[in-house]
Length: 401
Image (cartoon, rainbow, N blue to C red; front, side, top):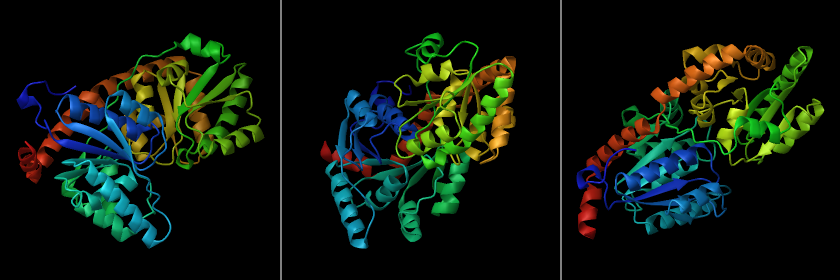
C-alpha cells in the first residue's frame, strides 16, 4: 500500500470522500472502488463513505461494511419522463449533499453522469470520474453526457482505449484524462485444484476452461457455448473430456445461456456455478481461463487469471489486447467467430507445455504492469493534484476545524 502514517504522508487527512456506485453487486468496478477507498482512508487519511444508486443489498455493500465504512443508498431509476429524471436528480443531489463531501469519486456511467452534474451543487471541492468500461450509454441525451464530462475536473480511464472512448463518445477534454491501469492482487484459494476438481466430479485428465463473468449480454456467453460444442467434439476424438465452468451472477442472461447449452447437448460439459466465494480456487482448477466479451475496459477477471499463472484466451478487443500483451494476441479470436475461438481453445487444450509457458509469462506481466501499489501510487498523485488545484477542499477543512 502507499504512504505511511506520518502527517506529511497522509495529505487527505480529515477530508470527506464519497464513492458513488451504481449497484451493490461486486464486479470489477466495485472491487477497484473498494481498493481505492481503503487506501484513501488508511493511507491518505480521508473519511470515506459509499453511496449506491440502489436499495438492494449485495456483496459490495457487505464488503464496505466489513471494512468499517458507511454504506448509504438512494434509489435512482433514471427512466421515464423528463420530470421523473429531474426528480431522480434532485433526490440524488440531496443524498450526495448530506455526506458533505470534499471529494466525489464515481464509478460506471450513470454515477459518472450524475456526479458530473451534481458535485458542485453538493458542495464538493472536486470530482473524479472513473471510466471502467467502454459500453454505450443511451440513458441520457448526448448533450447531457457531454455536459457532465465537461464539468468533471478529472477523468480516470483504466485502459488506454478507455481514454479514447471518453474523448470520442463523451466529449471529455483530453487534457483532463488520466490513464491509471487497474491493479489486482491474486488472493489465496480456499480450496486447491484437486479439491475443486473432486467437488465438480472432474478428473486430472479432463480439459477444463473457466469464464468468470456475470451473465450480461456484453459477455457473449452464446459464442463461447457454440465454440465449446466444437471443443467437446474435438477432444472427444482424442479420448478426452472437456468441461466449461461458468461463474457469475445469473441476472439477466443465465437462463438463455442454459437453454442454449441444452440445445447444443452440452448438459454434461458445462457447469453453471453461480456467484462463487472462491474465484482464485476455481481459476486454478482450470487449465485455461477464457473471456468472450464484446467489449471491456481492462478485464479484471482475466488479469486475476493471468496473475494466478493460468493461460488465457478470449476475443480480440482492445481491452483484452491491453491485458494480455503481444504474446497473448495469437490466442484471441474475432468477435462472434465461433470457429476461431474453438481453434484457439483446442490449441491450448492439446499443448500443456504451451499453457505452462503462457501462464508463467502472464504472471510476470501482472506482477510488473498491474499491481495494486502501482495503481494506488498513480491515484495518490492524481487525487492530491486535483484537490490542490481545487483549493476549496483545504479551505473547507480549515473552516471545519
